[in-house]
Image (cartoon, rainbow over all chains, first blue to last red; front, side, top):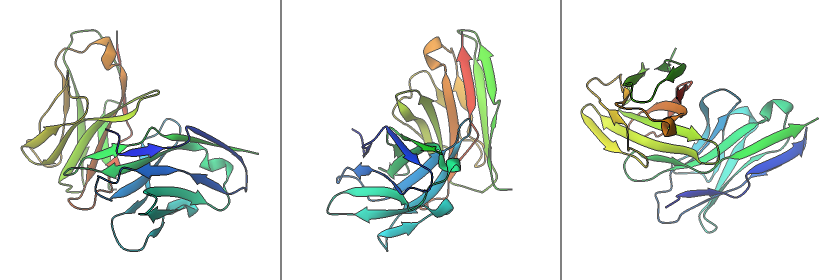
Length: 112
Length: 112
């Protein structure tokens, strides 16, 4: 069963616009949540993670995410995107033990 | 530099010819995992390891083997590759309890 669900497969935006990439998680799983980014022809890079504590998590490259327990969501946001943010973004969760499972991915395309 | 190193980066092989993809990390991480990435299917876990001599199946283990004889190495073995194992493979590692996995650059495998 899927532990996290990314609600949008593709998100096109214009440069300098704000963006939100949506992720819902299964409430039955542990609440360790992550966002990764994959640039073309590269591996995955950790953007940010939520293990506990403050529900607003700040990551690299100006991204942040908010853990919302009541809505079982962990949406990724950036107030102003750049062309270089064009990439695929993956939401992920840790389930049993150390198992990291991924959502289907969201392709963010930033247009000039 | 802290990293996960996979070799080779690219490999074309024939059906049935045994191959090994190596993975090594220099961060003294306990957890290591193998994933495959396929268009439309996202990232799926093949095997994972929580420490030396401790391995377990992920979501798609059929046709693969792993071993964890040393902490730093986690090779992926395809005893008899088939065309449906053509994919992009990633190795990743993490500190116990941290779960912020570091990914290798990937191995693009083609089985003809």
